[in-house]
Image 1 (cartoon, rainbow, N blue to C red):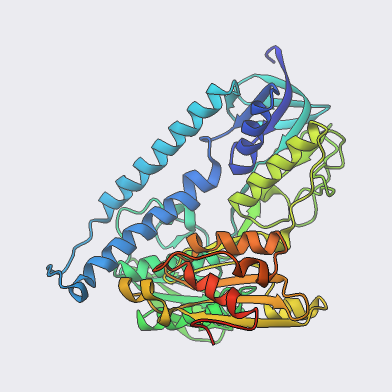
Image 2 (cartoon, rainbow, N blue to C red; image 1 turned 120 degrees about the horizontal axis):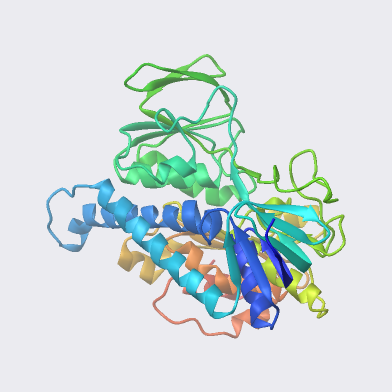
Length: 461
């Protein structure tokens, strides 16, 4: 065993939660060491958010070229060389990885590449021989795709999001098992790029937990683009035949496809990261148990990100990392309010929301009032030719406090920020109505909707 190296904070896992904690701690003057088995950036940068969105942008460019005649631009039928898109994706990932590595180094963070194990008493051993000792320890080893018995991932017939992001060629036909965020995003981009897609979801609807009005707009768009949707039915197995495979559904029907993508969520990476002397408690579902300050059952040891049972979002991991460092510094920090975090779904059309739905507001004792501004009356939406969607704002009828903002349509993920701020600052409709929205913009839709909640309006009924 190598010589022990001491740090104020040792972080195990350099995904969004872990590297955010490291960067924030180092900027506060803490001596930080971080252990990562792969490349810094974790699933989000290497196999998740960033590469998937690069593919979605490829789909957007392809879609725009195909519809360019509406703007008087004549082109031939576009072709797709997905290997080139794959190469561009990897270039984006590599440049961001290099930039993150350089930033961490510039702040004095020491990175150790190898498999780390928390041994207890503040010690982490690395497979390359080093032993790190931290006054405080943060565990953030992330998650990996969940699997289904009978659907062993082989990279040929059965894939998860990891394997999809390595494809050099898209399948002509594909079944996506799982109608959550990951499944819907892959369905959207693959259909836009020419694959015949069918989503199979065991639950009665796609995107459970998302406002049904938003989901309805997305489903209409999916159906117009030829995406098949089978809800309320599970899968029982598949039978490869050399050319492809036949998926068998629980209702007895079957579906012949080139490939199957399993997108049923992610599970925490909590196996093989704790030694015998570690006293960190892990739940039956594999999540590390933490208190409101993200401290585990072992004092001085914290867990954040996908390793704990909170929203599996990179930006939530960022916030949890900052919160832990503030606690370590003795500054005090409010835990993340998970009912108010921003959610972004990068399908076409995009979906974004923060705060409560009308039903959730009612369940919490509010008397909600709702206003919606369809994008059909928005000048910018008409100009860019994307009018399917709306902004929906939920407020308390008595105080006019903004409780939730829900958006579906073009660039919804970029339009959410003022709504997120409104929800988290507990702003009222009257306060927000004082702010002037630039014209013509998509963001006017939020301003108009809030304005209507004051009882008087311009374009919103």
